[in-house]
Length: 146
Image (cartoon, rainbow, N blue to C red):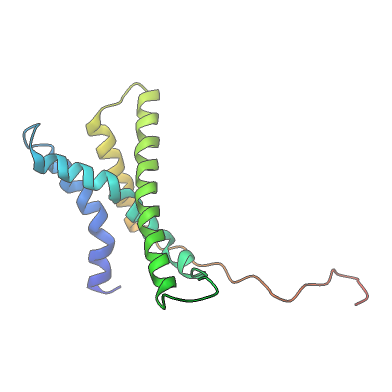
């Protein structure tokens, strides 16, 4: 792993720890709000998308028949990753908050701490391997006479 890859891999957890440190700022501080909102909107999702990135890259986007944009696949894949990052982050926040509410231990600090720990754990996970492409030739059942 190169130093650049390590830095990119550790950005989401660093954002979480930075958001936790920002909680020490006064309650109405715009810096505190920005750090927390940016992490909650992108941190957990970015770590999860990084884990799944090889599986996404195995099957690039299929463009329309007439190609007006030569970079359609690259732009489509980038948009897909951004949307997955945002939506997975929102899902993670909702799940953690729901679990904490159900256990009667909900607080904003606990949600942020739990998500930061989960993001840090996801940053240390190895990327998933892509599954092999589907076979194009049909298989004949065993014992058939073809």
